[in-house]
Image (cartoon, rainbow, N blue to C red; front, side, top):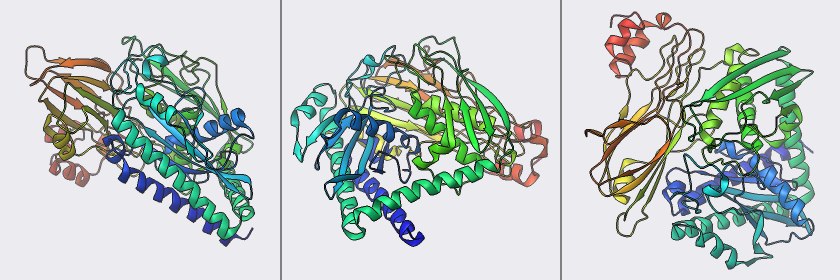
Length: 550
């Protein structure tokens, strides 16, 4: 095919993904969708291979597993107008039970030429806890109803019994129904737009363009890997705990081999699968691998499933990086972010110019209110941002979702208008960025006051083992969660957990700051002065840690 047509169709698919994304968050019912934007929209080829990566990067490798399973299960029993649904971490490859996927085939000339797909977090799909996300589940059945890949639309006919079954297991059926309706509509819209492209360019041209886009990504990555020095590099890191055995850390480990133009990632030395919900399925490990590999090689590489030809992953069965059912998985994201730190640390040997200190850990807060505000949901769910580590030539970004997710922090105005809570403070934490020639990003803290009784679930990491600095840089500040502020029962919690609280109780959450890069004493004095002026660094730390009088 000619390069111009390939590029036109690549841009058409990228624009369509953006269009799907926009319509979904504008149509979402829950704050999870319309504020946090915890979802992804994609277009896939006829075998389920991703063409253009979505903003929510860690969903990207999931679709191939899901579509592959749908093709295995249904074979020739897939028709125009079908829509499939699943949230199963093991049979569908989904990140955790709260993430629900919808997939629709695209037909042209009587044959499948592509798939349209979406994945989105649901407000509640049952399980032990409201919100279905648990800090201490010990099996996946604690985390919610499990939906293997099945049809929810059959040849254009909606199957309401499937919806009824899902909603019967939800504490928030109105929110879940609204988000499901928006998600199905966006998935179908994606399929319709691809059919329009087939009519304009022909199905054969579209399929050839997809193949060329996938092949091009593979060739670009293969060339980038070939420019790396051959060798072996290993790294490991510790998760604070699994949420159940809170005094026992969990090790993540990788050995990377670069040889003959191939990158091999071996996770066999990671700890056995955990009792608590911090286990990963291979789809999540793949997301960490490709994100870290592209980040280490340079930003001009664009991920799609063609890149799989250049990378080999090795797992050991029943480990935290390759868990087997019924191991729980709902706390997967904090593990993803730690695994990215570990992979980037190992990759630094091959391309030191792209080395980066460890970052913070985006985490989650869920408040199940006794009643809630009239006309609003009583389920408050938030993604809590963090910070990046410093790197060669740059400070780490502050107060943001880190690495894989690209999620949004819910605004105070939304929280206070929709839920019975008051935000008493929301600010950066001075000195929380690891000191270095290039400083780590700063974390933020929020203090909440509960205006009615509630159950609070906090999931976080990097409190016991804060983000590491490299090349002489210092560690970032650790995550914190302090409950019942200002009372005789004030407690700084040791790990993720579930807490019953009363009206009038206050709590403070603080995310982790990024690690520093390089010797702090070598930091430019003007950079230190600017940090002090911005209240990023205290005057005491400027003198004691950076050796600068400002």
